[in-house]
Amino acid sequence: MKKLLFLVAMAFGIQACGPTPYNEEAVSKYLKDTTIFVNHDTFVNNSNLIHSQKNIITVISTKDLPNRSVNAIKAYLKDKNENAQVKYYYKPEAY
Image (cartoon, rainbow, N blue to C red; front, side, top):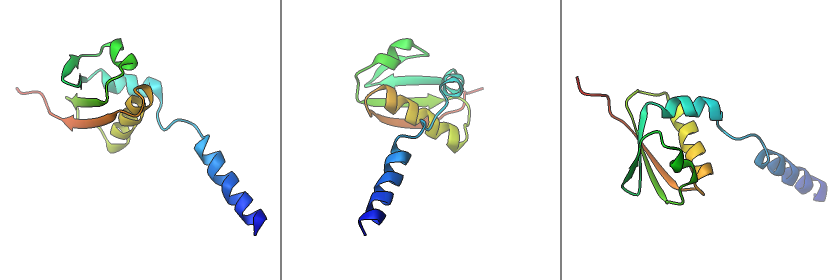
């Protein structure tokens, strides 16, 4: 029984230490088509966002991104901003 618990604990420990759920290079490409609001302060492709200590981040994209990309953006911003709450919206440009 102890060996089984040890193996289960090791499996969870190894999984928790795995790679990040996003590729920073890919996320930076996706963020080029977004406007980002941090607690109602607007940052458009601004490096200050990365170092923000705010707790609510709203991302508005002009391109319809697949769920995988949206999840990568959310994980990246949460990781860089101490697990901030990230909301994502798609709003195409008006023509």
